[in-house]
Length: 265
Picture 1 (cartoon, one colour):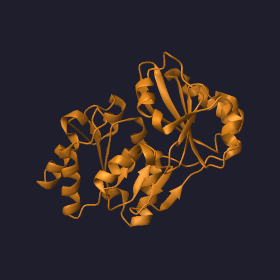
Picture 2 (cartoon, one colour):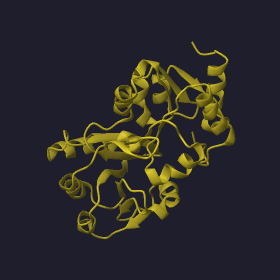
Picture 3 (spheres, helix red, strand yellow):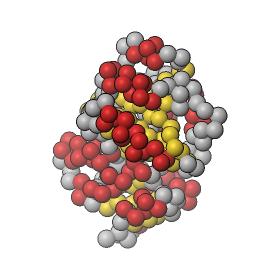
């Protein structure tokens, strides 16, 4: 939905409203937290549930929690022991700032542009114990590591018997670094779609899913029609049924026009 400047254009908003006017429900499915996506929710005023934080939180259209997967505090403590606070972000579900905590970042971290854009939602802490003492519900521990360390991360989780307690999602790669997100059990966008299938009574085979990154792949595999934005990594495009123009080229608007004129089979 957002272009490379992290904006939702008027044409994209108009396209989504066109769908709703035609009786086609629009469900927002994002890796962002409530506070991070709230400005766009206010613009859209969605009439269907909202999937946040890669499916760890699903809200009704009026903001009630329909589904939430929590990382237990003892699990978070083990994750601190494994990965530390440096180049890590601990996310909560909160409707007031801050909703994330960190011990700081390496100067060479290629995700610093993202970090800088979310500093107003972030609190810096020196000691993990200060976070664990807070009366908050943990949703996610995100860690920035070299992309080739994915297997090592899994091995570390297995070494302390956490593989069944958590879900590991790779959201994005920049240069040689990946953002690895560790959630509670059974979290993914695909699982969120399966939840909505039961909640709304709509088969996933009747859903159109649009994505542009690695955390969209499992949802693409179960949706009736999967669509990749033109700016998606090649691995994502290979899974999709079709590819539309990029986020900067109004790909969502293009897709909606094709749907409305019957150009999709």
